[in-house]
Length: 119
Image (cartoon, rainbow, N blue to C red):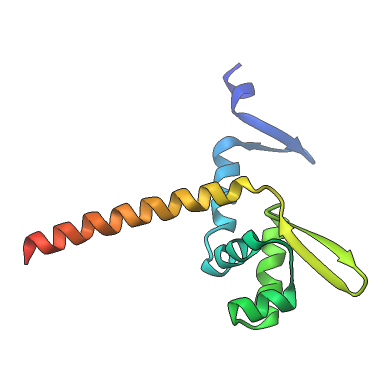
C-alpha cells in the first residue's frame, strides 16, 4: 500500500517516485540560463532569435537550454512557417520562480542584518 502512494507513474518499466520526479524537476531548473529563458517567456511566445537578442547570449546556447526545458516539459514549441515559437507549458512555474525569488530576498535581508550586527 505504501508503495502505491509513492509511485507517480510507470513508463517503459521504469517507476519514478515523487522524490525522483522532484530531483529531476529541480535539476532541469538548476541552470541560470534556463531560469532566464523561463522569465523571458513571461511576456509571451518567443523565437530562439528573439530570446538570443533579449538575453544577449549565443543562439546555440539558447537552443541547448531550450532542449533541456523541452525534455523536462517546461516549454512547448509550435512551428509557424519557418519560425519556431516557444512558450511555457504550465504557467504555474512562474509562481515557483516568484516564491524562490521571495526566499532569496528574505535570505539576503537576514544575512545583511547578521553582517551589519557583526560590524
